[in-house]
Length: 191
Image (cartoon, rainbow, N blue to C red; front, side, top):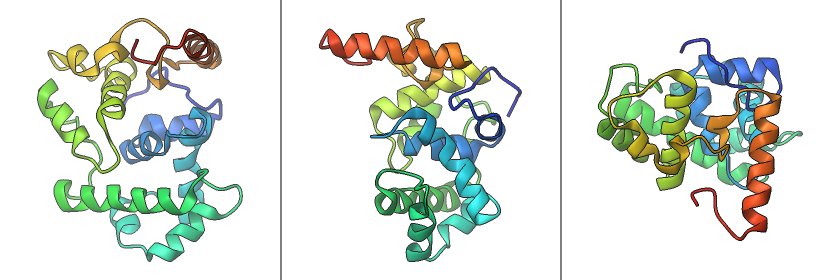
């Protein structure tokens, strides 16, 4: 993946990993629920430290109990380490079974619709997560097939509504402030 302005954690090594390794980006997006964005996007870095490498085939074939223990080791990789280790393993197994273990689902120049279909087929990727990842790819990595904004929905606009808008410490602060205001106004990220 290309060098881009994308800094969701403030940890230079963790940010570099999600910028440079597609599997790290997918795992971070998967972990991004019910925890801070910073913790979710640091997860792949810690996982790689604990496993020695970040490889879809290795994760998919790991003993589930051992992988759960890796996720639960303090500091835990997620608020729900057992559940998220299962989801990460399912994601990696899907990549092995359907994409030869490759996580870079966008490198072959898919159409926006194909990209949307590929991402939404991933275990743990619902509608909103799919839209956010398409926005991340478009805004931060220059992956902009014709029609990508329609598939990213509101996350393609200029509001600082998601991790797709985190290019720096200031970007993280803008997203947090915007989300706080949305909650105060009784609105969601997509409003």
